[in-house]
Length: 594
Image 1 (cartoon, helix red, strand yellow):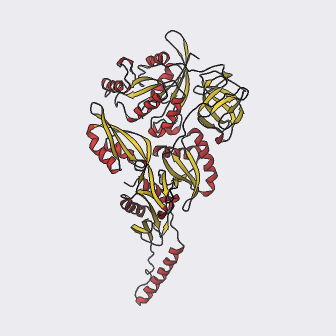
Image 2: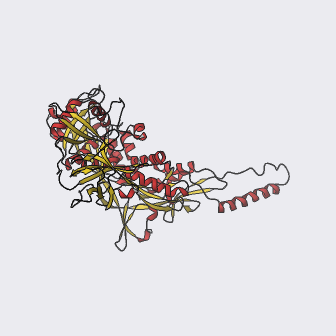
Image 3: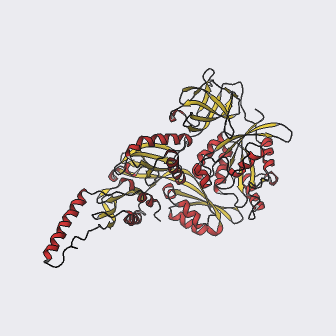
């Protein structure tokens, strides 16, 4: 056990985690293929150049004193929407490499990932990446790291994922500084599941870290939370492929194949123990993940509902931060109300449903969860504007607030403050990180940052601002439900909860946008925005008319009038039976109103 080291790599988006992981794998001869981002095996990850899943892999390393070590590396995502993946990886490690890009310096996500690692008492190795680039500022960024960590300058390793500079020093430092896993080889088996994947041929494969005891192939095991018993048909370690072993010891990170078919039977954070010699208590693993953004996912064909359910269950195995429950809508039929960690997360889930399961879905406008208090003091949690009680019943509504931290250069401070104030933000404090870079803290409603805040922040700061947030509390707010009516019928998929100050302008913009997007029919379509019974905005999509008088030339005017009257009656009848189909792009356009 004393020759095992478990570590992960944490950093802000695009600071070179996956590239550095490639160099570590090459240096230890774990992989021979010279290919970029070896661990990002999902098609989407390669396309977008981001890490979505954390990936575990084992390396063998011979230290300078000739001693053999086993290093378990977990490469983690950097985007704030996947911070749950990072927290799971950190729980399975004893140390981490904190990576900072020497061209960009310390950024918001760097700090929040660092605090996560400090909470779990991880040994931290500061690493400076991209030192071979022309615009690299190693001295300046080292000052920032020293201020952040309180370490010495000589403890910071300068590296480059491109040239491989600094890789031997990192490996030696991991062996010297990161402690070996603690645990008792002879105690009853206790292993924590930190990830799982679905394999169509072998069922569900769970990845775990052994905290105490050992596990042998063929042993009878039990999952503590679900109380289900299985036989460990195959166990092994994670190399580039799954690599079977007869026995895994305390401190090892490995996988188990036991023919589990139902997605609900594997919970990330659960404990595996032996049936013959069970442990007395489960490992306190992860806290339950709290979704931030809710949206409805509906199958385009109603009969695909069950397929969508099984696709979501399989996706949930691979991504424990996705939550869903069935719901129905008048306009869209049966579907699911899903909880996501953010907009990128929602986008990725949609893409993965399409690519991995061939499920094409309609997504409604994303919103957050609200606490609605009625006149009797009862509180209900509402995820969907359709679930709002009647306006006369409501005493007050509370909405979730977040503490946002933005790190930027001082020259962009004006526009960023204006943006935050427009989004109903309250300035908490601002402080200089180093030189001309400041960190600003704002309290803001989560609903305001859900849709387009991050995009706007990036564009006004020319990409230099970094953003991170965490939920703080629910606060009372003056919110109202805005309905969109087409020919007097409310379209529940387009209704939103919005702040009373923004309601009129938002309703007006929504009507104008829908007027552009709705195809013209044989009858007039009235698009109205309403708050309760009060109409606040209206647009009309004019009907398509055939020229019925074309064949009338000359003669009495009454012949023309007769034809026009006949057409008018037909249009009236059509309006009564006609219904308006809302195209998918209209739902999406509401997200990008500005």
